[in-house]
Length: 407
Length: 164
Image 1 (cartoon, rainbow over the protein chains, first blue to last red):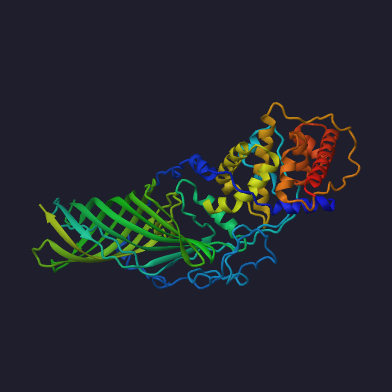
Image 2: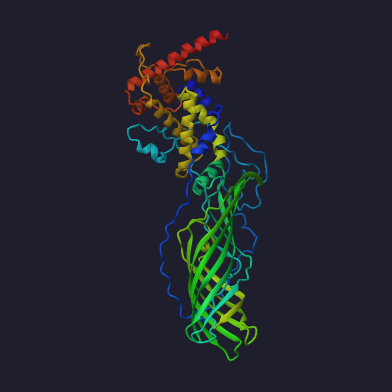
């Protein structure tokens, strides 16, 4: 290319022109409200319950990090390029966020550029033509000439699941007082705080609009911070559950029960680079209907009973909130979002527990119990990160207070 | 999303303005282009520094070409200048002119000249590729480019005389 063309092209590559007035407003009006993706929920056949539920004791909980501790820094990413485009706006130096598990050596003290490009336009492949353009067959597609460019060096991190404490659930326990008797109980769970952390490959959340898919945002954030790989860390808190159960005693030992439960799931989602990231707080409330089969073994002491139960539960999301805040250089910006659109989230699970129930007195309807076992949550195809998805098979440990009402 | 818009709109406005002289049309084209960008950003594959810029530029340029093709009176042939083969692609002499002056000169070219000039100089397309894009002959593309350059030379000389 002749020199004058190169120079002219170079000058126009740096050329900035004032945007048309009102352009952003008109763009914002045209952006559609995207409904959350509805993941079809396929019916899952309940797994065969184990006849040896009584042998299930408290699981040995794998050792993991304590609540609140974050993963150690994992890796060093690619170094920054030698030069940046002149038009790029460089933000002031701010130390990288202590929360980030990723260290970028060359950019540890510099916030990445907002719009980092080379001076010459590089090519993109034909596959990147958006569908609208590709479908207009009569019009010729403009495709820049091929220019080899560096491949993005994003590291993919394997998920690391670390459960700190046991999952505490409100039990559904048979209270075989009388043969054929009907009894129901109100029980609550004693929840402990615990976390499950997992890190994944970069999906950051811009969080400014809930009508654009998370992937879109993650791409934009990733592209704006082109010299750093993004990280996503999801920290789940232990679910808190309260339930009300009704148990029908078929015999003095066997009972079948159902009821209603309310579970609160809470997670923190951190995504982005070490200097530009989004922190989101996700909360979801699920209502569940459990079904369980109980087998009680009354002991010589009538106030003491050991039991085992197996069962399943179907839960549905009835409340949801997602609050996101954007951070640049560790500083909270004014950019934030709030969403309360309840997703279509259905969750099946099966559980098996064994426990001990102690009546407060021989004739009292109140008792305390302790039980342990396991719960298995089935994949419901949802993209919403929950502890159910990250840790489908979880130990179950519960202590509680129960009130039984018999005929 | 707003950050992305803010960091790219000035550049893309410049790109669009090179193709479209009407500012109202520039606004319409940018609006449609940004909506396309936001809707399809998740399909974009990052290939290193420069690929994002090239991708969004391509979307805007394509929309500009579509807009120009919709115009029924797009002038692609002009008989003012002889059909001289483009043997010497000499510098029209705009190197020291202010950018806004150069832009105004380019925008003042007839649609066909301007389109071919932009595609040849800024998008680095060959005349064969331009001919395929615009549905014209390769020789016609070369002629249009030559005439665009001649017209720019006239405008530059006139500007220099007026601003001595």
